[in-house]
Image 1 (tube, rainbow, N blue to C red):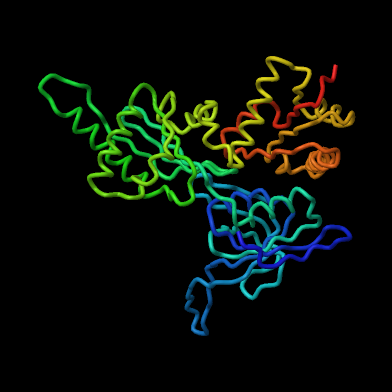
Image 2 (cartoon, rainbow, N blue to C red):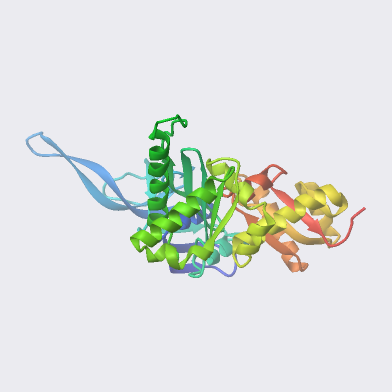
Length: 371
């Protein structure tokens, strides 16, 4: 994400920012920056009809700038597009004031967001999005018989880059159909890894499956890359970590990050820190529940007693349409930081964020037992 312009009042926090999204994750950050009542300005295409003096009507699409007040907000997790709807709030030659319109925020097309108040959580989100050092550092390949997913995992989003599905018949004496289908399946996964994983940026590739399928595929991949002289795989074979997964479905990625040997391979990534602190919280719930609180009431009580060491909070809570509700969570985050605690904001687009949602979306690890 590129920050093109930023004009925010130091007095009341009102103002606007102009941004240019470069990657799919930037659009997820954009979705988290927007809230009902914001003004969004960007270019769009609209069909304009003109009537000539003879009475004939001609229609053509015109590119124009529109300023929309957000009343509806959607994020498409498959296409990674942000769609906003609302009334037009700026004079336009072709669109009357108050007319409803839908804008789609896309990659490499700049837009501006104007708010009545840019609080610290919003500003932190912009800082994170515009940090050039961020990005996908972990890739995951989960597979089972005839099904595989190749995903890139960033600090905020798990992006599915390829889904491979091949029908593999059962082994039959005298038939080669099983081995041919299995080779076809492995070949498709092999191509997907080469196409979608950039080894210059990726620090670790997690390869998971039930049983020994991951081992068989890894042997196949190593033999093929030598035959084909695919240097990307030959030079980066040490980045692959083989681990257990219950299936080839996307949700099996969650299991990979529960393995301590896997976590030791991704210790330098932002993602691993979030998963590590969530796992610690879950363990404390079982072993020392007086040091693991969840739910706003209990977490806020611990904060008043300066007991919070780590605050775990879901980004979904900051998207609440009720301004007062959002403000209380923003105040909680700022208060914990002022008191020396560490704040971890979890994305609901990632499996760790979905786990946190199951315990209310806000939790805390305390410095001492509050009992």
